[in-house]
View 1 (cartoon, helix red, strand yellow):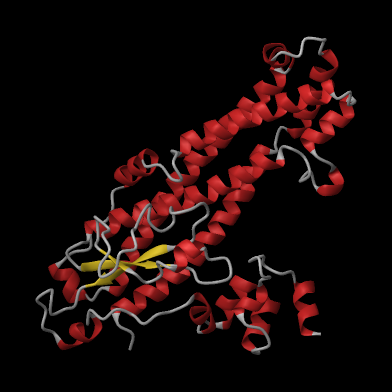
View 2 (cartoon, rainbow, N blue to C red; view 1 turned 120 degrees about the vertical axis):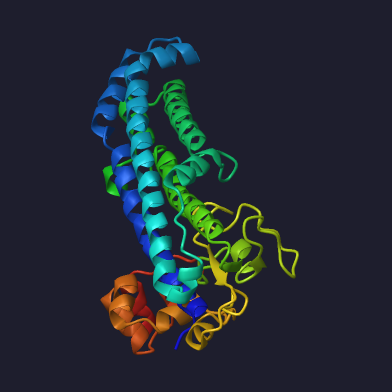
Amino acid sequence: MKTANQQLIDELIGHEVDLSRLSNAQVVAVIKILNGNDTELRAALVAAIEALGTDLSASAVDAALFRVNQLNSDTFAQVRQAMTTLTDGVATYEIAFQLNLFESIVPALVQAKFPIQVAQFSQVRAQAAARPFQGRLLSEWMDGIESDRKALIRNAVRAGVVNGQTTAEIVRTIMGTRAEKYADGLLQRPRREVESVVRSAVSHTAETASDKAFEANSDIISHVEWLSTLDNRTSTTCRIRDRLPYTLGSYRPIGHKVPWLAGPGRIHFCCRSTKLPILKSALALGISDAATRASMDGQVPQQTTYAEWLARQPAARQDEILGPERGKLLRQDKLKLQDFYNDRGKFLSLEELRARLL
């Protein structure tokens, strides 16, 4: 029989997989918005370049690019609205998840004495909005990317005209080519930046919600441990902190000197780490019931890597995460989890995996 703390670690590792899938879906949705005006943007660029005179000052170019800049502003207004909807949704989801998690795992006798408390959405939303990640607030990241995108287009137009490029060449430099799915254009950079911000906003908001949930239930939580997703993509920053204990609320190191810094999910862009609450023992909570004491023994779960966790999941869960063919290869012990990635942490295609088996 698993103890409550063992159940918690299994559920939270699985939850991080779900949050990663949520991030992937939201990135697709937001990038679709970002690309939504590309046809009109291309037409506006052509008109602006052909209308340019000999004055290439920033003000003159901005005047010619008025419609282009307007489209840029309109696009980012839609992106901001989508991000507000996204973060509100993540906060609501995470609050409900943490409540259901504790109510399903903590024994009834413990809940009778220490009722599970729910984090307040208004507090989570306010703190997520007011707390920076990677040095900026979410609103400031969006403002910066919008401004940089505008300057990127203006500078490319000016440079293209000075260098004698045709209108088509300048537009191609900015927008990219269909053959490369437009990834070779200058606008690919803000796309990558928006993707990083979306992923980071999801983890930042989820961690803020779990902060509040754990702190609201501090009477049954001893401390927290950093929980990293250990695979080929895990940063060295997160690897060194994996399973290190910290105080709840103040997040001071316990028995070591590695600082919490911004915390899991926020310590770097696209961070997939989270934190594991360690429940107090039934004895520490003043409960003597034998069954409850067996479940709430206060023992810290053994070290579990993501690969170990995945290996003991049902076949359906493995297939959901890896895909049916990769899941089958894992179960047949033909490939290990690390074999699904190259040395740079990129998830290999099925064709690349098949080549490894030849």
